[in-house]
Length: 296
Image (cartoon, rainbow, N blue to C red; front, side, top):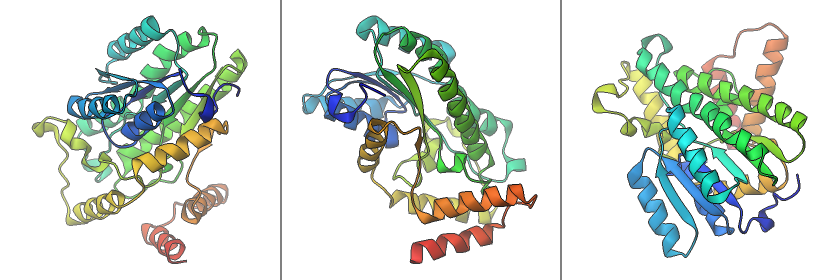
């Protein structure tokens, strides 16, 4: 797609939801660093303030708006503000996301609703409010929806609310891409499926009232949560990841996915078991694959 190469970004407009921390913050910093004007949105006002102060200190172009992506009208007001002020959006990152884990039958409905309202309906609201405007802007643009490697893999133990929501984002983005192609080449889409990036998503509950926070009932659940959260905290830096994302966008990639052998092996295994009519592999078998690929 013409006009979206990383070296040609100066003067373009980038909108990032979930910009107050993690991947969103890294994307916002990278966009500003390549000369884009950034509009960062989040419910985390403290995180937005830190982002804005850091970028303004570097002389980079940034504005922030508190936006709850669960609220259709709030996202519509964000889109209206951006187009009234700038008249275009060259990159839209529908990135805001949260994670709730634990046994699927023990998660209260508020946990399921929160996961889907942020992860799925946040993306839908972004598409509905921004895409019609982008189609009329007369300039190239791309919608990048943040799914997850979990939005491509089979169901992981204790991960049903998160992975179910991310599978929905994956399918929505595939459909969006094909529908946009019918409108012409100017606006397109990418599906971003991060693997392990050092973010605070495993402490998403910090954004909820104390009374609504998730409670893991079993020792197995708590051990799983702590082990994965600890590993994620030591993984890829969001700024390094953002550079990879922008390189993929510049190369006109639809799938922005992990390239490591473990990810590829799990995807191949899941597809093979589906075609053979077999049940999902056991958690122990997946962990053995993970250990083998990481060992060599």
